[in-house]
Each structure stands twice: as C-alpha cells, then as structure tokens.
Image (cartoon, rainbow over all chains, first blue to last red; front, top):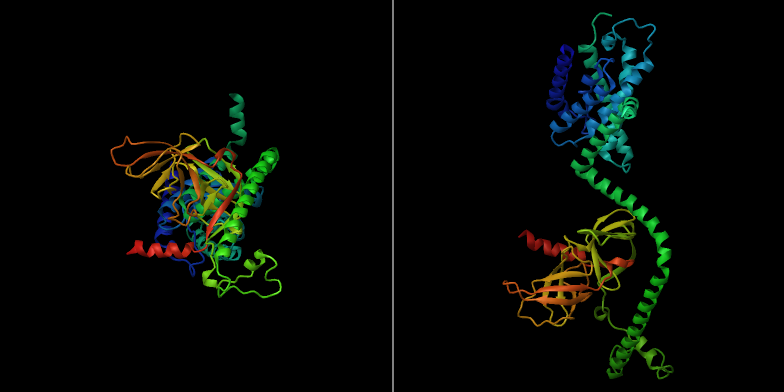
Length: 172
Length: 305
C-alpha cells in the first residue's frame, strides 16, 4: 500500500510537471518532451504484467485528457505498447547471475550504461508510436520521422537527468 | 469452464494488451478529427475493394439482363437522334441560305447533299450551346434498399475527379448524392435514405416541392410543399427542379402514384413512384457541374451577409 501511494504521488507530480511545464516547452514546435514517462520507467520490475498495462493505459489517458489541444488517446496507446515490451526488455539486458540486490530497487542501483540501454529503446518505441499515430498516414514520412527523432533525443535527455537526479542512489 | 479459465491464464495478458490498445485506438479515431477522416476514407477503400471483387463475380450472372437493358437504351437513344436530326433539318431548311455565318467552302459540293451544308455552318463561340453538366460513368458495387439509411458504394473516387456532394443518376432517374470520397471509391447517400432531400417539380406546371423518403417501400417517395391550388392528376411526371448543381434540371424522378388533400396546411401529400429501380442499380453516372464552385461561392456570399 505504501508502495502504491509512493508511485501514485510520483506519477501525480510528473503529470502536473508535464501539463504545466513540459507541454509548453517544445523545441521549435517540432520536438516534444514526454517527461511523465519517467514515472512509468521507474516502476519496479516485479510489477505484474496486467497491472503494468493498466497503469500505462490510465496514466496515458490522464495525460491525454488533461493536455488541452493535443490529440486524445495517443499517449494511452503508446504507453501500453511501451510497457508491454518493458519486462521482456529488462529480462533480456539484465544479468541475473551477477545481480544480487533487491529486484524492486533494480533501477535505483544499476549503472549508467545499463540505464541508457534500458531507457533509450523504450522511449524510441513510445515516440515512434506516438508520432506515427499523430500523423496517421505515411504521406509526410520525412517530417514525421524528424519529429520522432528530435522528440526521442529531447525526451531521453530530460528523463535521463530526472532519473539520475531523483531516482538513483547517490553512492554506488 | 475450466478450459476458458486456462485459456485466459495462458493468453490473458495478450488479450488485455489487445483490449487496451483497441480502446485507445477507438478513442484516437473517434475523438480526433484528422484521424477520424483518414480512417473513414481508409475503411471505404477497404470495403469498396471487397465489394468490387464480389461485384465482378456476381456481375457475370446479370450480364444477359444488363445487355438487354443497354440494347433497349441504345435503341431509344438512336430513335431520339433521328428525331433530333429531323427537327434540325427542318430548322435549317427554314433558315435563309444567305445567312451570314453559313460558310460554304466548296461551291462544287454545295448542292450535292443538304446535310453536308449544315455541317459546315460555323457559329460564333458565344452562340455555341455549352453543356454545363458532365457525366462520369461508374458502377454501383454495393447498394442496399432494405434499411432506413441506405447507401450506395461506387467504383470511382477522387482519382477520377469525384468530389463531395456530386449527384448520382441512373439511366432511369436520379439515384443519390456523394457523401464520402476515397482515392478509388466513393460512398453516396441513396435516394432511399431518410436523410436525403432534393428539389423536385411537376413537369407540366413547374410547381417545385421537396422530395423525401420515409423508409417504407423502395419504390415510393414523398413530394412535399406542392400547394393544393395547383392542378395535379395521377400519373403526372415528376422531374428534378434544377435549382441546385447536384442534378440537371428536368431529369426524371418518377410519376405521381396518388395524392391526398387531407392535411390542413394547404399542401398536397403526394406519393411518387420512383422511376429508378434501386433493387437492380448497376450502371450509374456522376453529375459534374462545371461552374459549381462559382455558383457555390456566389451563394455563400449572400449567406454571410
């Protein structure tokens, strides 16, 4: 229960930050930062898969509903897609033999290279799905891919800073 | 029961994933306007190509009757051409030979054949009759008559110059109006649709009313707003009013089946027998009006004021 409260609070904080700050900071109106993804990326790897999907859907929908003017449903779809591959991806890149810590704190203690390896593909999945659905056609594919690429860089840099700053143990 | 639970246990995660993604997708294509439009035209393209495949198979069974229809239409047109030729001859015989713009290039051949002379007549451009309507032939690949809101799918789309709101006519009478266009297909509101309205008039006295369909019978529609002061009898011809760019004026709609004067508002209730056979709709034409944009923008300015 304590855990649930903790992650809910973190999500609400990121949601507010996303709506009030980051939605207004687009790079040349092309790249957008989806910093609320941090609250999904730091979920414990032991979270059951169905719960993970429902959390992703709910939080994505909340972001969609409260972002005025943005298209509805895009974040929900992309969040579910991203979280559906998350657990498999963690299992694939984590060496279980050498890791002896508590799995719940996995993300808190992993080194920087692992963190990049973990975050970047998931953010690519999210942004690719988000921008392709926003365009909803392959007519201006170049522009769509440019938006996707810049958004990946933008979102990744900000999320990386936040995770290292707030969600990792300072001494390793 | 146990099997169902086991099935859910095995595929439950995947089903949940599919379920949530479908909900999100449904929200995306219903709430957002651009995505909605794109998905609509995509759906039309898919259902259109399916219906076309079906139509090419079923079309073979109707070849004989279609052929008969075309033959009779051909004969009818032939006789009309002869009739027009006759009246044309008559008119030209009355025109004085010294008419200014009758240019006879070859004086030797002048008297050889009366018809050849007519062909050499050159009218100035301003006097040439200009047809404002163009007809684009198409085939109805899907059509229903049994619903309250019937639609016709046609095998031509924006690549063939089809735009929204174009009229659809069959050789027998009016048939519908385009409401949705994709690259290769278009969807038209059938006359047999409760949303369909068009101007129609009685041919003999040009009293204009509004035609609607009530969803009862595919053979009959209703004509409203014809005042009870006008003369009418059963069997009178009803044609399109020509007050819009959708259908050409005086195009066949149907005949008066029966009428009654029961209502107190001073208008007839006229039941019209539609001349188009919607059950066997196959060959149709899109109606393209060449000055349509001009007329629309002109009428728009009046509405704004």
